[in-house]
Length: 367
Ligand code: ACO
Image (cartoon, rainbow, N blue to C red; front, side, top):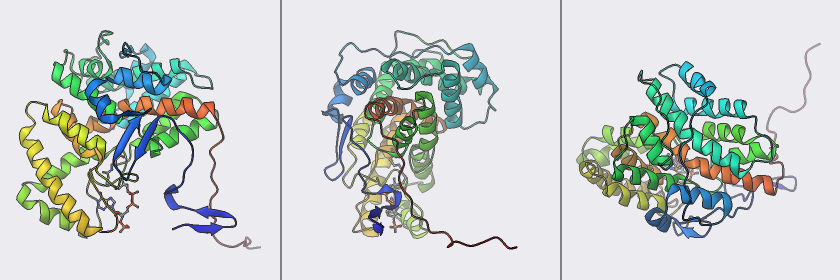
């Protein structure tokens, strides 16, 4: 509910406020449509690669030959990652790596496509190195022949991933690449708007994505399905969760009032993964119960399945542990964060909203 502040209006959480213009993603929340620079997400998942999509977001052009491989880590960066406690949160590790990479490279403003390319290419190597080091294994050098998703799996596992897993993770990266003024992207744009550098923008964005209401949801979807147990127990569990005032993970979105098109795309990707049938059948059945109960719970505010519900299926299906899910989402979103940073810099205005003061009236310290 907006309330006036002088001639200004107030919208908590900036709900319904248009805070900029973009030519990157078109999101039609009512109809459940998403396009990157005009191309429907379903087409990009079926016929594109993350390398092509990242290039599209950065340049605006479709480049069939685009190839984005993981970059090797500077020795200083390996040292930083090595020194992190083994039980660090993977998002903390990735954010630290982005920050350390920025300290090594000392990027200048405005951000450039080369910078966007470089930070997007180094992030999977940093995350894979962290994941191996915490298991007592040494990092693996990237293979320049592999695209970003396959290259990440290779550096994580130390062996070449099978074709189906590499393709599924690449599709997940395409789906996760960009999504308008979400909280982490907006954070990146705020940072760039101050003439700060791209590494700072990405580090800040990772911090915003870490929250369970944004990028932390897929791991919680796995826990949720585990806690629910069987499909027969789903309705009682869901009703009890909502009665406590808790949220169902993998449902609801600030923009989509219709089914999230990314969830639909990832559901088909998950269906193509071997060994997923049992888990997926249960997830699909529980989704139907959840949608029915949510519709009763909030009849005037449609809460539908979001991308994270089926992201959980794909990430599990390619063999990633849930504690890496948010950080893998962050790897995919690098293309969007950096493309938005380029776009922000082109038309830069300092992002600095007003705030309504609700504290005490003027008062004075005791004599
Ligand atoms: N389960 C139960 N209730 C919900 C859910 C949910 N998943 N989502 C929204 N609601 C309810 C809220 O409790 C609130 O009810 P109230 O008015 O009685 O307090 C109402 O719907 C509106 O909630 P808001 O947070 O104001 O609305 P918004 O649409 O901005 O919420 C959000 C979006 C934060 C993503 C929310 O749906 C949520 O928390 N979902 C669960 C976490 C999740 O899956 N996050 C991933 C999102 S996708 C992404 O970030 C890539």
